[in-house]
Image 1: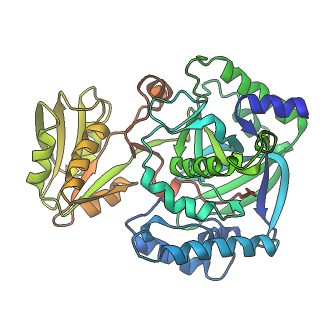
Image 2: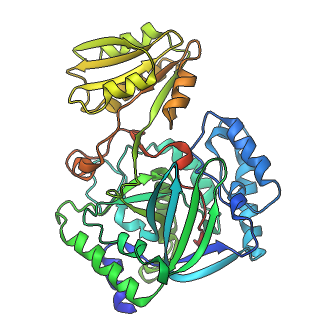
Length: 434
């Protein structure tokens, strides 16, 4: 076992002591979607609150971002930490020691597979130009870390929604386990709320399975450029992972080298997913500008390209067709009056998200506001409200994703998402961090 642990340690990985709700707890009420979803739709979260009621739920352990500006942050964080301790003291969990959990998520007619595992925060960096083994794929917004940190620094456990990508074209890591579920012990199987689909999980704790996993990960690691090895790329939840890193940096200052080696806070529980899983779909994250006159937006856009060509189309579906699979830099926008496809010549950034981010940053500096939206339908609805502008971005090619990060560094923040809002990871597993 010691040799196996060392093999995992060499690639920044660890089998985790994973906590799951005990039998009898309603998992349909326990699991809720990631806190950074439906950020402009308080009605969604109000409905979740009604569904959950007084039942044990991860809703009571998270801070939905739609409430960040409500002025009750301290109370919310205090309630979260208190509830976490109550759940632990009330022995709501069964703990599965030194294991992985194989996850199957079925939603919108497709399924994707994942593997719950702990990653070494000492092998991660969000810094620009990083060549760390575990790496941010988008720009990290440092202002989003403090609220999360105020929760985690006093928390007895973590409840992650983090999804991390591996590039396994031969499908050698997760897929062999997915083909062997008949011999694994199922630990949960239930319907998620609010059109979230279905979630299943199997315990992976056998010595042979761990050996096979270690060999598969080592094979991926062995193919990497030693000077720029990217084995684990952040998919969703980078700011939560960055928060865990920040907390660990604070904690380890007061530890000896020996204490640092296996301290629970050194690691963060995540769901690993293969970027080549056909059920994993990359969706662009769109934007909505609020109370921005169209002329103000277009004037700012003109500063970021040699030429801006505008083409009116009938609807958002027409935009999607025009901006997909093209070498030109294109995006779309809508207002209360029309839908438009934009083609840029000599833009100021390599991808549309980068060009638009420069425009957005300039508008924010002038006092305007923006929200980042998962889902074209919501973008269309909000963008079509009088005074607003909805911005539709093209999808990122996941086949060249890892190479792009290695060559060009992190993408502009909020460039992509793995699925629509209802398809995002729901909170389920927990892990002690004290």
